[in-house]
Every structure is written in C-alpha cells, then in structure tokens.
Length: 193
Image (cartoon, rainbow, N blue to C red; front, top):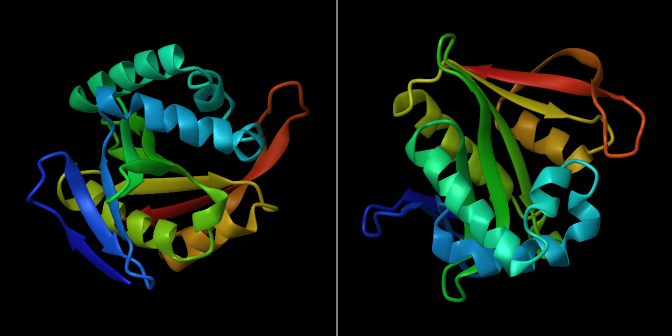
C-alpha cells in the first residue's frame, strides 16, 4: 500500500493506493460531501450507533447531512475540530471519517476518532491514514500530544493505536456513556511529538 500527500487537489490531503489498486483519498469535509456522508452513515448505522451516535443522528437524512457538512467545514476552517472524509477516488464515495477533536490549543493536544465502512476494515487503510494525519498534526498543526480513546473490546481500533505507535497510558473509569447505556471504562492511548 502506497501513501503520498496530495498537492494536486487543494482539498485532498492524502492519497493511498491499496493492494487491489484502488485509490483512497483523505480530504477536508466539504458541503458537497453531504449526500455521500449520509449514505455512509446509513449503511453503517449499526457500527456507528455505539461510539458515534452524534455523527449518526446528524446524518440520517440528506438535509441533516448537509447542515452537518457545512458546520464541520466551518469548524475545520476555524480550527475548532478537523473532520476528514475517506473516499474511493474514482467513485467519490465516502467510506469513512477521521476526526481530530477535543482540541486544546493551550496544551497543544487533540484526540483522534475514526470509523470506516465494514467492507474496508482490516486492510490497513485506517492505520496508514492515522499515521499520516499524526505527522500532519505534529508538523503542520503544531500539536504536541495526540490521543486515541477506545473501548478494550474494539480490537480493530486498539490495533490501529498500537500499529501507529500510540502507547497505552491508562484505563479511564466510566469515561464514556453510550446513548441509553451504562458508563463504560475506556482505554487511553497517546503519542507525543
């Protein structure tokens, strides 16, 4: 799998060529992405329900998704939160999302959150993207600490954290409460610039 930063398209941050020669692009969310984001969320509703309920709720219809895309694009531009889409280049189909969120510019810290379509998981795509975005966050954004907070049973996400050289720091007791659920302990992984 080949990874390269992409300067030919101003909105595209990164391109990855998979083993089966598909080009995957990572780009800032744009208003025009709303329909494809809606399709992605609806197709992966069961996967997003537990850990991405706000993203799910905000994208269940095209009208909601359009508002979401406009808001997230503005937040990206004002450095409140960075949301990247993961797309198959030839189809322009969104197959995943990556957030750099919970930004604290005073201590230069942010947190990754990511999700990918079930058809594209366990292919190394997410790890390649997180590795590239980590370098971007350190060298371009000036962050000093990046976090991944994950439930211990989410083995693919734990694997991404480890593969991308994030170190386990500690268990965060009852750090996340799912919609209509009981508080869950979460695992904190960090990487430093």
